[in-house]
Amino acid sequence: MQNWIEKYRPKKIYEIIEQEEATQKLKNYLEKFPGKKKSVILNGPPGTGKTSLAYALAREADSEIFELNASDLRNKSSMNLKLKPVLEQKSLFEKNKLILVDEVDGISGTDRGGVSELVTLIEESKYPIICTANDCWNQKLSPLRKKCEIIELKEISPSGVKKILNEILKKEKVELNPDLINKISIKSNGDLRSAINDLEAASKIGKIEFVEIDERNKKTDIFKAIRYIFQEIPSEEMLSVFDKVDMPLDEIILWIEENIPKVYSGEELARAYERLGRVDLFKGRIYKQQYWRFLLYENIFLSYGMSEAKGKKGKKGFYKYGKPDRILKIWLNNQKHAKKKTIAEKYAKLTHVGQKRILREWNEIKNILKNPVIQKQVKLDDDEISYLMKY
Ligand SMILES: Nc1ncnc2c1ncn2[C@@H]1O[C@H](COP(=O)(O)OP(=O)(O)O)[C@@H](O)[C@H]1O
Ligand SMILES: [Mg+2]
Image (tube, rainbow, N blue to C red):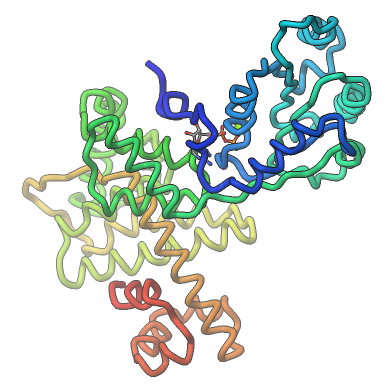
């Protein structure tokens, strides 16, 4: 079955949203070809419609597209073979032709070979050549830039993303929680491809069969592991328990977060949460400063630390452990950090206290920031305020 990205790729120009300026520029280029610059680069972040725009315009102009990729460019015979129909003399009744070199970033990666081939091709071509790039400002692409008009495509706005997602849901006759749609739209950061992918995944989680198979094997392990941690007497053996679970620590955190409140309460729960918070802190440092040794501590906090939060005892009884709603939780988790960071940034600017210190003393500072007068001074926005009040 076709995935939604392909199924809903815009076929007509009017279906491409928020790229009117780029569309106009590309049209002009095609009409004036060969103008001042012989080729164009559609430059912009992933999932903003570069490839779709090239195809939709070609269709509208009744042109045939010949697509070349990085490896064709490095391989002369493959290139000649693909371009043979293009390079032959155009007959009177034939369609116009267009060459598309998608994602030229790819050729700059390894060597210059491909880039100079492409430049030669542009110089000699009788047909328009459209290149696309995520970032054409790479130094290795500078010879190419000289031959090209650069057309920038912008990230899609959250409301634009939402609009497309809702249209797709309508066509698929699927209903999803509007809150989740909002979250997916914001999280996508203007990348429609990733938004549509997330949407498709989210819509399938509702239809269990599919996800279950893949989760089943993991499930027994992670369920066993957290049961062990939460209910057994803490011991040294626990330190290695997550090594046996086939799941990244980030995801294990979500399982723990989801399930501790079902087993622990009062003091125990507070201690467990406090330790989980420290895992977050370590994670930040690990990524920023690449202190990979800290990964060890992360593991300790999650295994022994979680178990010991209830004291040196076991817990009898049957608890119904559940599975976290992954996409949402991961997103929320990231988002939580994102908000904390923007708040810390603003607070740092105002008080000249270092951001790191703010994050370290977050609990105190959070309380200070609950004061509306201070919120105003720090210029927190509504989202940041609601985050502060929630956590
Ligand atoms: N501007 C846009 N308008 C409508 N849909 C878009 C737009 N940009 C991307 N999409 C959606 O995202 C998918 C990927 O787009 P694509 O053109 O391949 O992005 P890019 O080449 O910029 O990475 C498309 O199939 C389409 O569903
Ligand atoms: Mg593309």
